[in-house]
Length: 465
Image (cartoon, rainbow, N blue to C red; front, side, top):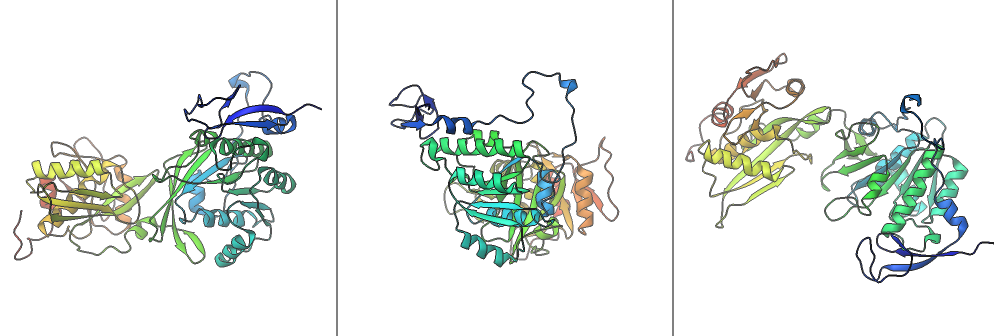
């Protein structure tokens, strides 16, 4: 019988060395190399062959390309981000802040997978079966074919997958499962990479999609080795404010579809409910005629959305005025503030500016520049933006306004939500048709846009800057 082989593995990055070293040659950490004895059977099981291999090179033109089948998850917004549904054999990694709703969303997806009499496996490595059962009852999930497994050992999870051959599997989370034969601590980078690779190979061979839940760092990125994101087929990020009901599911990586799609959910008693009309949800609590508020049509993937941009100016109590942005790119805020001061004559040098995109959506495209400029000027001058007016333009350093991409789709969304006018740059050579009921107001510069976009004179007793 073959004897176990001695290996020296780094407990931080999982790198292997031919002998013990004081410093890992891969990650550079000291005293992280550990001696591990691996049996031949576990080494053989650790790297099963990938399916579809022909044993040699093949001509690209000779390979049959069948259309990828899709399996709907039962959640329309999740299917949208995935590109139409789950591809059999795909490995999906989902990350997000603790308590944001990752386990709730995946428990709903696993429950929906059993609707047609199929089976699904939910492997919980962080919660007991009792805790998962309580959550399922709270959400009102009726899933007769959903199996629960409270286990942290990789071999037990692999055995359950082989026995059940489910339609869908969920592992919550990848950072807490481990392989005893590897000899590394649970959660170490070597364990995370090894366990994800084992699950990936099984998913490809069995044509069963697997969801992996991943922890995040303080900065909001996925914890663990970066090549874990390269290993999986799809990376999803669930975002949102802890005290807001709206949740945004964003595709960070997708080998089978677009990476720019987002799904919008609302946290209810029955779980995460897909929002069919996100623009209405983002503008639901908007106060008409409020000072310092403007609306911008933005584009997330193929979906146009209307988002409220708010700004507040206040005399600074310190030598240097502060610029704070929530949900907006701070560099765009600095650019717009500088243009307003130098090109439009607004006195912002002694004003703190606090700007925000309402609803938890992060707006990074420059198409919201003009709405941000209107919100800042509205707050400084104490004049609201013209009623039912949207603003769509990028602001240049010379104060000129520029068109945003796919403008017609954005304008159609504004018209659908009941807006009667939209402030845009001059047409020039562009052929942009306004939808029925929407009037286009053209402004070539920021100064012209402020003259058209702000309503009425300043309030009595407030001097115009």
